Image (tube, rainbow, N blue to C red; front, side):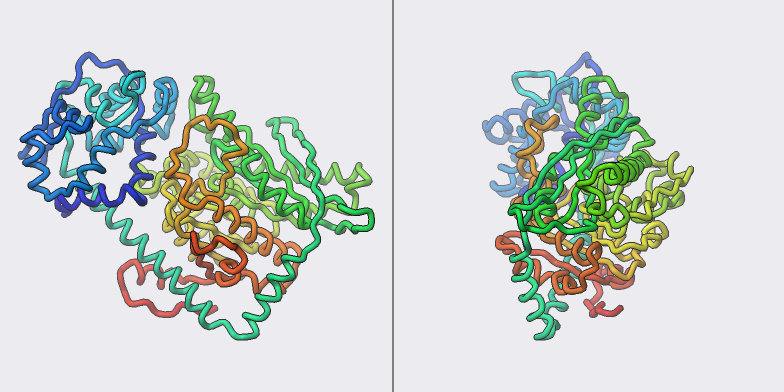
Length: 575
């Protein structure tokens, strides 16, 4: 059982790190669409038959900087809150989410929004101890519609449509206990990955170190090409893509023949231009790169949701449509190369690498051979998904498709780089074991959308392909690899905290990792083995001390389980 004071202090201390990100994400889910007839006057904290009440006006006065009332002061003293922790609580009460009532209403009509309200309604209840599902909707929509104060926690409390707001402390403490357990497990898993990477670096031979240094100079001296861009449009789903092609800078510069093709797949609600920086980087160094928009899960789909033109965040079929988009795009590139002399014998569409972020990471995994697991998905989603892994709100929408079990593998795909991917529940251990191509999993330590432990680290232990890599980048988030400058105004504002402290470092890492990984496995150049180490990456990326990287190529499930259980670290360096 978690002590109340420890719980509050844990929330306060975590805000500057993962906590503030988690609170922001949860805030996005607290949206509504009903009009209440009352306003809450008191907050009722109940634990079994025991309960205490706090006047909402006391909380409002505290939030506005008027200090603690006698009652609040007594509670603060009871749980030993410091002045710093009180300041954080005040900030939480007044933090404003810039979201319109229309936006939040549309979201809460989706499957994901309904699930969030059901989860929250078990803790935030009506005075009669009934689940607060409808009341939460009402309170939040009114707060969002209040132009003066906006959607803040204190305004939500004021707008709650019953005379009181009951917080089931037993349910809340159970959630808090699960959160702290997850955070402890995650820290132990991170420590294991860091230790394995450090051990590998220490055991590197002088020859391996020399080879890495030589390769770094070689990569620096790679010929650079001019890059042209052209639009490709596919019929049917009206997929649009940009083809980035290397061109000679000088008349005597030779172009590479049989260029491998790299496909970039964006995440949910994103656009292809978010990764132009990566596409240009790779094309400048001799790859043909094509970045596509997935029309059923891009920013336009989110716009349709928010305008009421789409009833769901995505259509269930999008889990199949995304990989099929990529396969259709490769078919079109084959036709294009056959009819255009400037592309004939230049594009090798049977030698394809896929780089995908988030939902795009799922797309890459499916194309690489990951198969669906009905049992794993149903276990993860029934009766409700785990609230500690927000990506399950998306994955659980795939249930009907997973039962159909379509084979989405494309044999032209020879390597995949999955960045902050989702897919644990959709594929499960058996599905990941079916991936036969070289695979790199990229995780971020501050990712609260697709948390690294359940979505990247543990699935990495399920991979059976001999060529596999796990990359873990510190102090970066789910959104760090996205180039927001290319997107213009975002449909849903993303707080700066969610971008991470060093997004430019994450993007530099992704560029360098993509280059060496694709040279190794699409160009079949074994010299690049020396680059697929944490030591090489930190030397290659100038700003790496801002966000240290760990890279390993092996991790047994047993070793991960032992680390999570707090057992002593034992070297896992074995084939």
